[in-house]
Each structure stands twice: as structure tokens, then as C-alpha cells.
Length: 510
Ligand SMILES: [Zn+2]
Image (tube, rainbow, N blue to C red; front, side):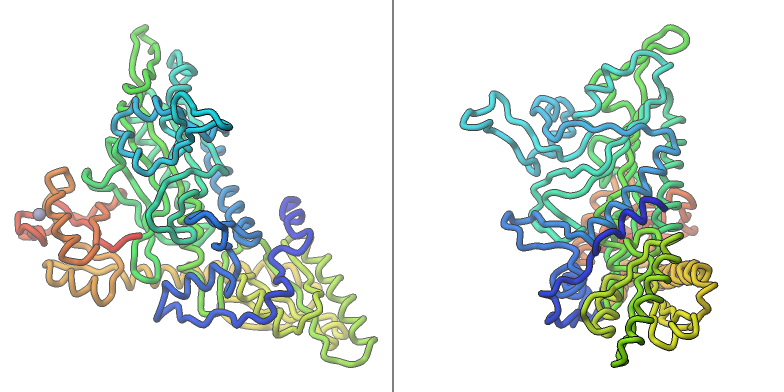
């Protein structure tokens, strides 16, 4: 908690004077999610990003957003370190030869930003701004790994950004420079690698679901939609309020492809030289942020789970009384409450010179879970009124119970967010048996639709392409990793009509 207190020093996210005239969010999340999302992210809403930076597709992350993003990072850093990963930091630039060596990776080239000059001299060979870590990390791994004693080798880099020349950008969904987190693991056997993929799923459950209340399905992607350099790709997909899939993480079973390209070898116990197996796991920090905003928010603004909100509670003095002694008593009692709550929570006493109503709006917009209201009556009776962001409710409690009440309130809010998200997820996962049914559902309800499908191998790509065209954009997300549903006897592929071998999930996607 020591870190938490450090975080509240100063005035995190406290609205600047210039914001007094803003009108707040006017779009409805239900009716126009896209506009609502933009408003929440920008000046009109929670001021998460500034999109006025003068390089197109690059945004400024403002303090409130950056504090949330940092907390998401912290949660994953703790998880991967508990799982035996060591942190490291590789350079931002990658020589061209590294990218070219893994020919599957050459596919990245159109999206790569290149550095070609140093001062006024042209570089001998261009340097890529890192689009992802594989091609820089594995040549060094080849130097680090000598024998089976060096395995497993588990490392990660965190709090870095990567660069891709995306054609369209959207805050926290797609950016030309975006926040990145990646693990890179090397094992003796494929069995060890697969066990890691299950552990990566465990981390997603503990962070995305347990702490952030974001439901997801962990898919095995079809062969035609895997990461090019992998044998298999697994991904955690959630559903945004517009029914589109949001890929929150990916884990790649890299097999021995990269070991082959970059010369990773080890001497095994029996004295023979072997090629190791590799995996990499990347929780999308940005994508988690987009899911937090989109799934939990409402027409008032953000609603943040207690694990990532920069503040657990804000104290608002209610002083309409003209008597100076009332104002003084209220201020003192607020300070007392702040001191008490700060023993356990990130709390802030908002003593700024604005009205209580203005403060209510601003902190609700920022998604702070708990508001403590203290007026002359509370100060006199030694009580505090607690208002919860979700579910919307208020109660007055004794000062002696303050921290217990805040704790209960945070628990209640987290459970409420889980219940709401779970309900939305269930209501927007449907089944179709024919292409027509699928098209109807995608058009009216969107979300996930489960359909019988011929093949998730490369031979299924043709049907997936037709499905995408017919539904105006739905993709085959894959089959469930944990409990893949089996087609019933007589189920036919919704596209080609051949016997179905899988039940796949389909959805529109970001
Ligand atoms: Zn088919």
C-alpha cells in the first residue's frame, strides 16, 4: 500500500480550471458506442488521451490514463515474476538483417517504421523501430543458452512501446506507437511449452477476470489466422459493447521455427545437441484499457474496478452553510477521514474551490469507485455518507467503521462489474446452424455466434473468407481452448455444407 499512497500525492486527474465549461458526455453508449468511446477518451470526457499531438496516429497518454495503464502493467509483472520470469530491456531499434532472417517475419515489413539517418549521415543499413520483440531477443537467447541447465529460460519486457504503421488508429485499440508487454520462454520439450500456455491462460484469468472483471474466451486460433511465425496461436477475446471482438492477449506456440532461424541449441543431459521449443505471451495493455473503458463505463463516464483505479475513494466536503465554523468543522472532519482511509486506501480530499455537484460529476466521470460526502451534520455526528459508483447507492456510516465500509463498498462494486459483464457476455453469445441465421444474428445482435464449421486447418480458409464477405466482416475466432464444443451428428459447415468438424466462434473484430 505504500506505493498507493505515493500515487495520491498531488492532484491526480483533478480537473483543470479550463474544464469547468465542458458539457460532459452527450453520446449514449447504447445507441452510439463509437462516439461515446471517443468522448470518454478525450477532452469532453475523462481526458485519457490527447489526440492533438501533431504526428498522426500518435497520442499523448494523460495522467489519469497513464496511472491506470501502469497498474495493469504492475498486475502482469507480478504474475509473470511469480511464474519465474526475469525482467530485461532490449533496445528500441532492430537491425534489418534480424528482421530478414526469419522470413515469416518479413511479412511485418510494410508496417515497420525505419530509421535511415543518424544526424546528416545515411546509415549503412536501416534500423527498424521495434514492431515486436522476437527478432531482437532470440539472437541473444542463442548466445545465452548452452545446456539443458539453462532451460527453461523465461524472460519478459514490460513498459515499452512498439511501432507499427497502422492505417487507422483509435485510442487504446490501435495506435502507431502502443504500449507493449511480452514474455519469451524457451523449453526443452513441446510438452513444457504447452504447460506454459496453460499457465499463461491462468494469468489471464487472475488478472483480466479476477481483478479487472473482464470476461473472455481463450481460443485456439485457426491455422489461417495464427501469428505467421507460430505453430499455433491462442488468444483471449472479450466482447466490446458494439459486439466486436477485442483480442486482449495472445500466446504463441512458436514450436522450433525461431530456434531454427536464430540458431538456438542446447546440449541435453545425454550429451546430444537439441533444438529447444519456444512460447511467447503478450497481454495487450492497450486492449485491456479499451475493454475497461468500453465494458464497464456508462453514460456518466468510466467505472473502474478497485484493482486499477488510481483512487479508491474521494472525499467531497458539502458546505452550503454560510457559517464559518461549519466550514471549518467540515474541513477538519474531511482531513480526519482522509487520514484514516489513507491507512488502507488510495484516497483524496478534494478541497478545490468548485461546487460539490461539479466535483461529483468529475469524479464519477473518472470512475472513482467510492465517494465520501461530509457535511456539517456528518461532522457533528461523527458519520460519513458513502456513495458508490456502481451500483448507484448511498448510505451513512459511523466513522469508526469507515475503512471496513470502504472495503465492503469496493468488493460490492467489483462484484457488480463482474455480474454486469458476465450477463452482457452471455446475452451476446448465440448459436446459428445456417449462414442465413448467422447473418441475421450478426446484423441484429452482433457478439459471438457459434457455428458448425468444416475445418480450422488451412483448408478452412476459403470458407472463412466467404463467411467474412457474407456477414460484412465477421471472422472465425477459433475453438475454445479449454472445452471445445463438438458438433452434433449431422451438423454441416455453414458455408460449404460439408460435415462439420468443429464448432467455431465468429464475431466482428477490431
Ligand atoms: Zn466449409
